[in-house]
Amino acid sequence: MIKETINKLHSELPATVKLVAVSKFHPFESIEEAYSAGQRIFAESRPQELAAKVKTLQVRRDEMGDPDYMSDVEWHFIGHLQTNKLKMVLPYVSLIESVDSMRLLEAINAWGAANNKVSDILLECFISSDDTKQGFSVEEIMGIVTSESKYDNIRIRGVMGMASYTDDEDVVRGDFKKLADVFAQLKEKIGEFPNLDESCTEVSMGMSGDYPIAIEEGSTMVRIGSMIFGERYV
Ligand SMILES: *Cc1c(COP(=O)(O)O)cnc(C)c1O
Image (cartoon, rainbow, N blue to C red; front, side, top):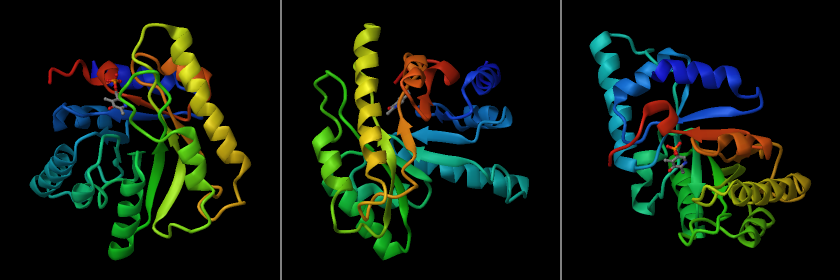
């Protein structure tokens, strides 16, 4: 089933949309199955789980005597990241999609300065009408990208958001339009501010239940979990 879904998504998604397979709460074997069907980007939402899967991959490589096994796999982080857990995540991921506070942004930048790494990040924008209030407001995002002081160890690659938890398609579409609009505002300012350059190309939106709408509204990256791997019973 995993293989079939990956194949179906790869053939259906527009070439401009990257598929991020959300493997949280699913075993490493499921990741291997998706990988063997051609999937390369996986996302995790908990630091411990990400670290455990990276370790499992290393054990597999050792057992197989093949240091190149799955060497082109990419990990994204999509969950809430506490600043004391950075070292479990930052060395291994190609993108942190869920930067949701100034404190985290500054901690990632400081960690990068100390460890000689530039981290690619997305700014998480609060677009839904749910009361979780996770992420920056549109105003806060504009404040960050138009700041004149450069974050030397961070590259702002775009924005991420989650639509309201509802079956009402109009509400979901309205949320995605908000994020697409924030992204359009960023694009207009490219080159004018030190933290905003041509590498700002991504608007990550759309999950199993709403990704077709997200794509219609301009998503470049969909994060799909349960549709690929099945329901999570945790
Ligand atoms: C779990 C999760 C997803 C995937 O959700 P599904 O509905 O299983 O596709 C996408 N984005 C974030 C931020 C998540 O935490």
